[in-house]
Image (cartoon, rainbow, N blue to C red; front, side, top):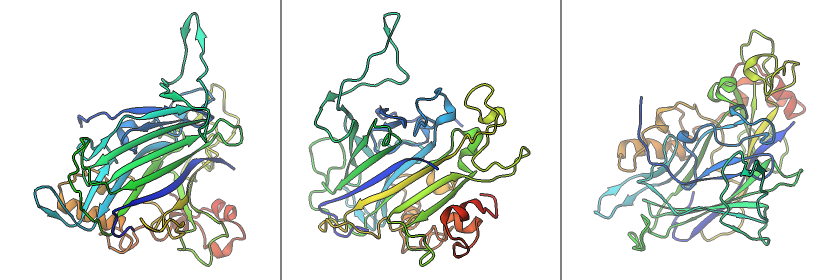
Length: 388
């Protein structure tokens, strides 16, 4: 939570893969960050809604490229505050500005042009005199001094008057090519659109909540059923203490669990059927979905004025149902819906479907045994007692 947000708030998030009816919508600018073995298509609004489905977290990107490799379905970025007065003097209490889950919401998020900066020139592959490529890459500039092999800078003003700036870094080093680091800076600059005029020069925002929600999937929608096969867990949120396994992270992790399957155990998805092969003849039982999808908060300002890391951030971690109506038809002017949204993202308010804190207990705790009964996290992970 951020009280009196009239300065800036910063956080770093790690995301990666760890091996062990007709609707018209506005299209935001997109760019591929495709260095290394995990590729991701990024939107200028700072979140990738469902209209971009099957274009994110492509891994392993260097294997035969098709829809079987995507680990990402949709994402939202919401910013909520307990009250907000618009230019007409109308007060909304609370108010939430959105990009995602389903669409870009370009009447709420106003993106600036994206930048793709590379440490080195991109390799040119020429076949029969013509350039050959898997995905289009337009590098804005080459800068050998950057602290990544390639990075994307994206920024957007919002109708709430809060500016979002996101730098996404990736590497091609063989030991560091399956994750990206996101740096977010939120600034209450009062600019509610793309022109130079400051609509809210003196606004003070109380109880600001920033919500990152991502619907992941393993490989493709056929294998993962839009994520319904996943088991999710969280560490460092304090919910399971003292039974939490000792990890110095605030992390969420997702893996391909066990579901009813007439070919045996689906845990990790053995490659024995046409639905989960990566190539013809791939039927020897190799795990087609061994990845652990992770998201870790590396750092978060304690407040807009206190730049020490706050170990209690994120204040809410866990999982929600992927098809909840609250993630549909989000509107900056719908007071009733925004009241539910704000309760949904605020740990101290009760939302009608989940109650206070919204996501307690963790999903893994609900479908595996008591953490106290296991010596290690992976023993509990393997002892799945119910279907996801």
